[in-house]
Length: 116
Image (cartoon, rainbow, N blue to C red):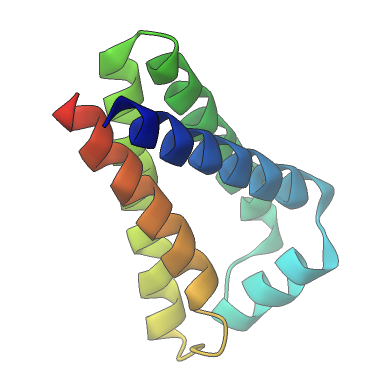
């Protein structure tokens, strides 16, 4: 079980780090997606910071600070529930799998961290 926890959490750290970098760099796909769901561009650095903080917290959880890892995973689950809700509210379903995938990773990391 510990191996699965490590693999899933490392995947979540990498995924959230990558998307936070894309937010900070204002990548074209990030700008297009945020415009489609009605998200102001000025929010991107803040959202990128939240994703980066979540990734850092997950990493701390892997390094032994269990409560930080659980808190970070919980925060990411809530964050991506909000992202999925934003897609549903805006009726942007063609790419809802992306926030859904991040939500799935964060949920798996949370469940596995809590079960440790």
